[in-house]
Image 1 (tube, rainbow, N blue to C red):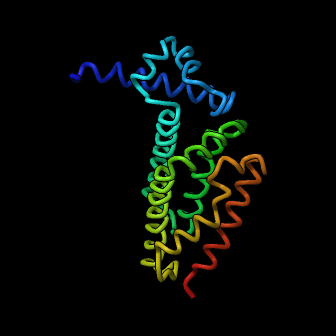
Image 2: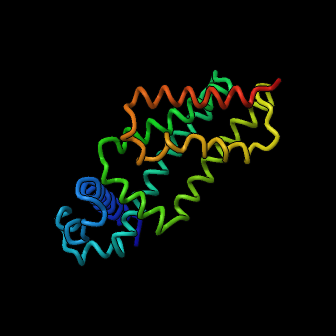
Length: 200
């Protein structure tokens, strides 16, 4: 395929992913068929299969796009000037929550897609968790360097922080509270973590 062909292919793939996401969030992953996605894209099912082998492959592509954008926003937090390590950690968790809230609030069917990707393609989730853990470890390492934190093992501590803040990063929990309450809880939980990490 030459370079002039790549843009139309990319545009068609994006159209397919956009149409699929709309169906998954409205009707659920399990109830959506490849034929329905093809119809929404004004193409034949046979043509759709030229771009994606099956529905799972579409789900994985959507997950990778979503997690990639989330990681991009979190990396921006790492480079934001003028923040202490504690402030950066709070901002990091808040940004993670806000991205999930913006993307998935009011879309309960999205949990079906999340569960499918988590169970059938755990490597996608494992990779994202690894990236997030490294970014949190960078915040902890910087805090240790400046004397704000006392952290013996940044990676192990980052993993513990991720476990403690899972509720703020997974669509399943969005129905538990409103946005303002979630953000208050983020600040409270991260505040406890920061006080626990503080150098004495």
